[in-house]
Image (cartoon, rainbow, N blue to C red; front, side, top):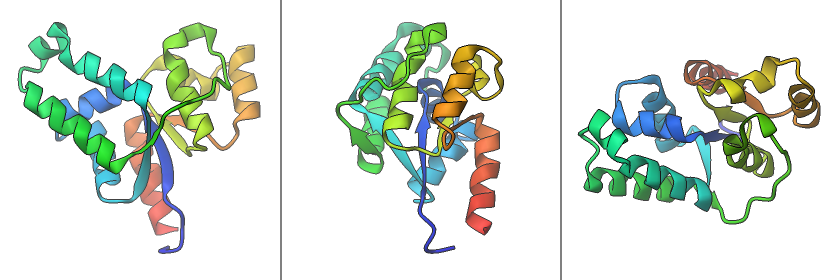
Length: 162
């Protein structure tokens, strides 16, 4: 087990938001796996910029009043210190269904991540959908799994015991 490589993972923006806002939820448990060194988080400068902007939105701050400027800064600094950060992510897959998801997909593809963790139905449908783009994605990127947080926690637990 010690010689097994760490799983690579990309968390979408909402998973990161949930991780910082709800310390006891599944998203926070996913992030703890990164902090404990069990998985390798992949981030890009673009995703970090988006996350910072999202965490500063008045609607987000109203919903999560505990998200102060200091907590947001500490959180993003912690992410920077634990993640592998890719500066330039080439576009290797186009996803017209939701182009806002493309940065996460392309980062996961570029870094050869094992998982993209999300609750976004557009992303999750890539694993089971019948559209041509879903079929193309599964055909081209067989080693990448888009998965929900609880399923990810189960997959990591299984990986650690194999």
